[in-house]
Image (cartoon, rainbow, N blue to C red; front, side):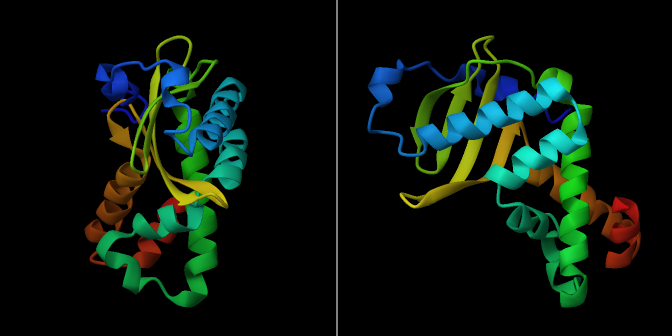
Length: 177
């Protein structure tokens, strides 16, 4: 199943008027800004546009390290910066590849529960953001579109590459290049 098809997953959520959310969703402004940056990147359709938006709003280092799964401890400290850079580029390429399913405008927050913020575009496409932070600022930790969480998809792919190569983290580095 494609990452961007997970937007439909959030479709079952009831739409609440913006006024009903006032004061109840502290991350609302941040999610609207982040979501609009991703929608703009989708219109541009380039990996660089997605990478730029993600660099601005997401905790890409944490997402990249999460994607290593049980192999996290196998990544030598000296290779961490290179790996994170390659993982960022992978995210940008992946998101650009599926940009046509992630198009829209007029993002609004539909509901908030804990660190999960559900949003929709004017065209009815749904996005679910998992955020971390607080009054001093938020970061996107994961995004769900078409029933697929980006970080989970990356983890599945990256762990699969490492496992197929008998635990060799360098095989993943080569795959990402």
